[in-house]
Length: 575
Image 1 (spheres, rainbow, N blue to C red):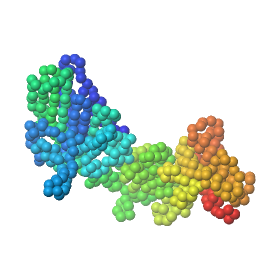
Image 2 (image 1 turned 135 degrees about the vertical axis):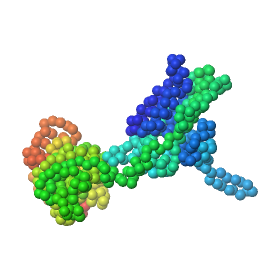
Image 3 (image 1 turned 90 degrees about the vertical axis):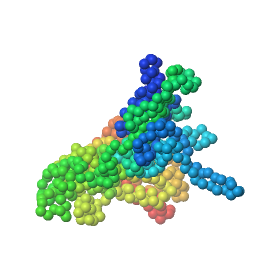
Image 4 (image 1 turned 90 degrees about the horizontal axis):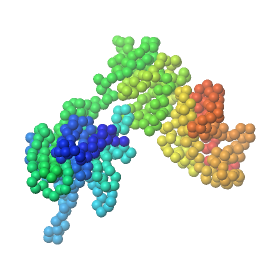
């Protein structure tokens, strides 16, 4: 969605445009007093109006012009501006003199002396001869410099902030159909960065046409020039019949110090020396104790600077309750938990390496990796921090300290290995609908039944929904195995397996996959009842934790997928 401040500005413009019925209010309205107040107040806001059009009273457009051209301001020249976003700036011209066609590229300057080198920030363009609405584009230099991208669902040009949230930078609201209202606003800091880097000043040109009754001409009007300040000036024409206009310019120079504007570019947030750091309870391997220490760089040591001090090593592990991961599993669009690489990603904003789960069910990470998280993210992890109940996982010890491949591969990793092979080789009997599904499957680590059932839901989407009925039916026909027309993929596959592998009848060949299907249909699909409760109780009774049960089923599924691949890809009679 657009920025909240943007919606408030849109509401205010509609409010001050409404023509009052009382004489005192009408007199103020014709003089555009609230319109001028809006310009003054907005000049100091974080959300700046760069274009606004509200028929028939309100118009603001902005250009950027070199400060050397605008200071000191020529009031008489600036109030005679004529540019709009719809004004064409570039075209081809040609000359047919002497029968020789000579074409040239032509750039049309805005016109006024003070704005001769100005550049539009907003361009309004319409496909001529059609009913398509006007499209509003930004100056591409600014778009690229600010790193912003248009997102339809947000109706804004956006960036991803340090917390991984999508932040609107340039928000656009326009009425559908007749387009009688358009508002475009821009965050101050990205705009000031561009202005400071290019040596420009933002000039807001405005025209408030307040027609209160029948309008014939401006004869008998009184024209005055006014200046609210050295940066806001206009001419105002009032007619005794109750209408008038206020037309002028407002200069918005950069107000933020350059060192603050460009600090994040020169010194990224994770590298800033003055940034805040949370403290964590750690397992201090160096001193063989459990202590609380800050994640700040100066509070720990490493191989290169450990001599002469007893500071904990920055590779000291920190342990957390498993619920610390629930936040990331609840928003798969924003976060990705990569179990195989033991990493958590946040939309390109940050990443956390070295994450794993130990035998006691605790999530753990290293202090030196936690320190690079945004401070608010560190506080999230701190809220789940607890004393260690054991040490780090075997996989983490082998990977991070012995520099070896892990000797243990999780059952889920086995499943994903087979599935990725299918996605690469593209057998006709299985198809991956969405590659994003592979990133959304994670082993449940907490005691939450919802997390456990959601894991089976994602597993079902990848494995079961990928099977293609028609090719499997073709295999059955080829191998002369009968089937019913309405039988689904798992039933059809089971007909192939006993026929080719000679398995006995005492146990269904796809026991693990059937468990996945059953849990999805009863728990993950939110069908509460005695059956769902019994499945959950049985999982805990037989395996102790939801995590252990999920891993057990994944182990079965991994074996069954290998068997399916072997049978479905084999020639009749060879398996």
